[in-house]
Length: 173
Image (cartoon, rainbow, N blue to C red; front, side, top):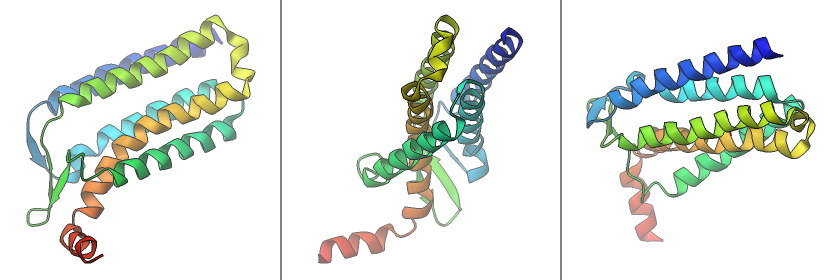
């Protein structure tokens, strides 16, 4: 158990360093294609999946709660897309514009506290992994955070293309 625990700790430290580099890279205004922004959500999903795989005693239930949190958060981000204009998609150049990614480091800090907190909690109370509530929260909390990140990207890419049509339909109703 301790060898796997040390490996997981090393993996989490590497993810924090790697994602810190990405967050400092996105610190300024930038306009790039989708491939420039896509590694960050993929790395967060990989990180959450490794933590869920290692700690979940009821693996399928944790994955289902992860997907539930993900879909719930994507839905909230799509509903609130008018108030949160972080990303938007330029149709002419096919590029995304991200006005300020200073919040990316705060997001990284929040996810780090949650996932490292899970690891510390399980280290001091190892029987906690057999709890249903722990397995539900193990999937749901990272799913909320990652779904919010993916929801902003989804709203920018798929919904900003039809923004003019959408505003006309809303005004007619």
